[in-house]
Image 1: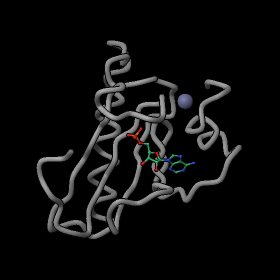
Image 2: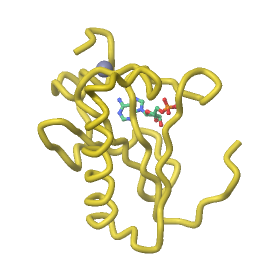
Image 3: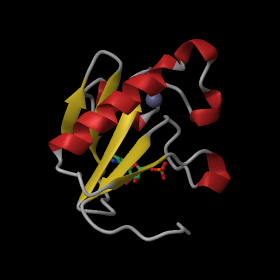
Image 4: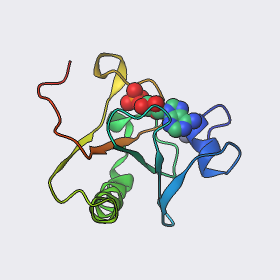
Length: 114
Ligand code: AMP
Ligand code: ZN
């Protein structure tokens, strides 16, 4: 883990979060500043700074994230649809340097994003 990373601290239970899904590889918790009725962050537990930093041998974690998203969409009744967002780097609007995927749903979402 990275000592100064808030999402690593959530993985380690050093700071609280409403955890909604957990496996050996992946954790999901509700976003502290929700932008939709359902707004969950899905993260690999490993500290990977952003999408572009995923190493070849870590690519399987994207499958783990995908399985988490499908299960969470079912758990949170998102059969009408949802959006998965990864903000990467400064221009992508990333503010927390631990890769995370936003799962947004529960309302009709606008497009394109800003
Ligand atoms: P991003 O802008 O893509 O890096 O998204 C970071 C997200 O993390 C934002 O939606 C924040 O609301 C959320 N966030 C920041 N700190 C916490 C926290 N301690 N617990 C839950 N969500 C958080
Ligand atoms: Zn981290």
